[in-house]
Structure formats: structure tokens, C-alpha cells
Length: 103
Image (cartoon, one colour):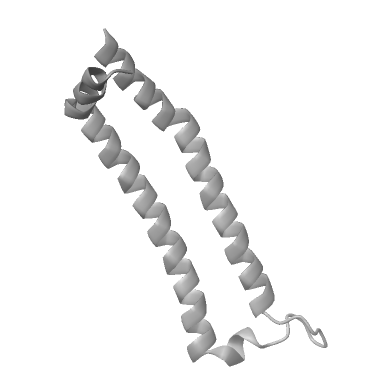
């Protein structure tokens, strides 16, 4: 694409709405992941006895292990949500902005 097309895209109000929408979504997911992670770390720091309890009577697996695994699964789910939204909604919006500019 030429410099003129890039300049027209950058001046487009739809482009700025698209960027703001994508950034809001990205920050929301980032904050969610950081919140879950830091809550787990705070739990480890201030209530280690709870996470250190056995999962079942006589088990060597503690409550903290499935919680840690759940945090990893949560991260994968957030990543999947981002990829899905990016490949569907964000790509569609981006293509529409470019098509409108090229008309």
C-alpha cells in the first residue's frame, strides 16, 4: 500500500475506534490474568497452610497443585478467547476499514 493509503487509514475515525476497542479488550484480558496470578501469589504469601493442605485424606497432592493447574488452564483459555476474537471480529473490522478507505 502507498503512503497516501496509510495516511488515510490513520486519519480514519473507524480506525481509531478499532484500535481503542482492540486495546480495551487486550488490557481487560491482561488485567484478568495479572489479577488471578497475583491473587495466587498473595494466597501463597499470606495463607500457605490452606494451599498446603492435602487434597484428600492421606494424599500427597495439596490443594495448591490443582489451583496452580487451573491458573495455567485459565491462561490458555484467555489466549484462546483472544485468538478467536482477533481472527473473527478484529480481522473483519480491519478488512472493512481498509475496504472503505480503498473505495
